Image (cartoon, rainbow, N blue to C red; front, side, top):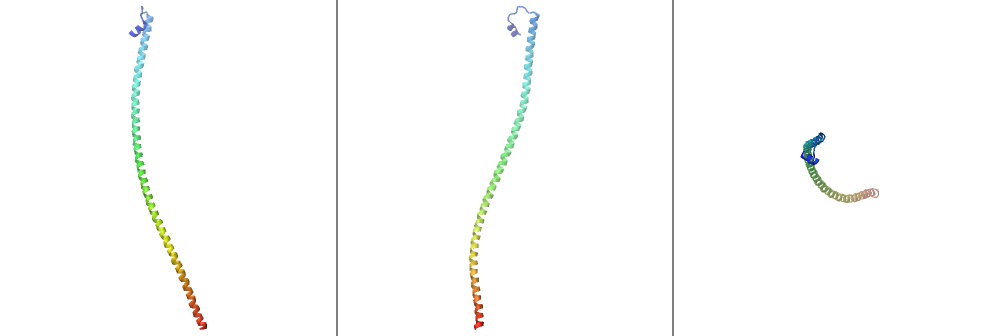
Length: 145
């Protein structure tokens, strides 16, 4: 109230009209003060609600961290499986090498069989020629003999 009086300056007389004006100013000041109190209460309530939202976000962050950890675990398992597939691939490479070696040996054996087949063909031809010669000699002996 002293601030209002200082603002007014030196007033020589207070009439009803001036007192009513002072009363309105005081009421307006109290209304502003009430509004400030309401705003403060509203601000405090909002802060409490934001604290609740922050707590929920922290819970969501914790869950995401948990899910991220699970993805890391799954990624590790996939790396392990990939290593196993690499190992199996290496084993197949070894088997493929051995099969190629065996295939080379079969080629070598097939070459030897070709040589044996050539020799058997020559032996067969020699025996047939000898047999025809023997039959011809027997027939010739029977005819001219």
